[in-house]
Length: 223
Image 1 (cartoon, one colour):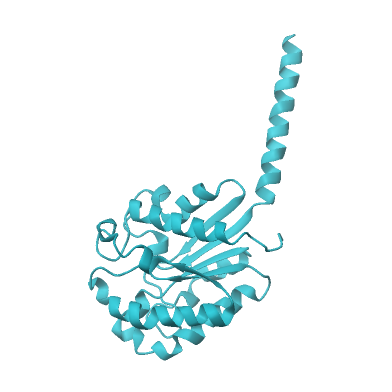
Image 2: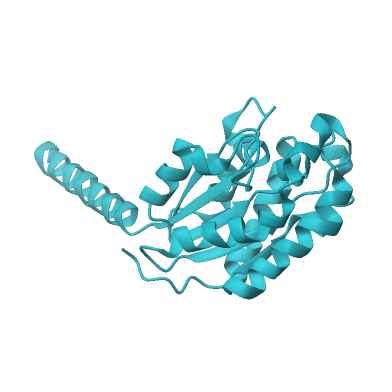
């Protein structure tokens, strides 16, 4: 009896292991591109960062990776362009089937925004870079509001100049829009320094992205 029990137990373990491997192999890859807001600056518990919480919401059929880097810009001529980061190369190599791009906050700084006339072309170039070797579903994001002028970030530039350009990118590149700005306008208490969301704010972001992904069922081909 004991030997039969052990055989059944090991058979079950092997079955569950095989199912787990199959599920992992067929997971939909989601790349979260962004700056410190995506990275989760100031959030000590990594499980509270928005990409991690997004992964929990989406479940086992999705593999979500955080490619956020503190202080980075969309502008290639910005002080710290995302383009030069290993995270960008790693994100491309990840071959995501869903891409979430949330850049623009640091571009609003005066020394960066003097190159603002190149923001649209740089943004469309990034969309093209992710489409070069595949056909991912790409979501472009209206940046969360800036509730302070800390780090020389300008909410007025974000609201009146950057967001309209992002909407133009969405229209021209046939991507989907995620609107953090208007949906988080009343959530200032969840931004611990006026710029970066805390764990609760990150959860709100994760919910917004989750709803957007579920609104547009994945039509990409699994690689």
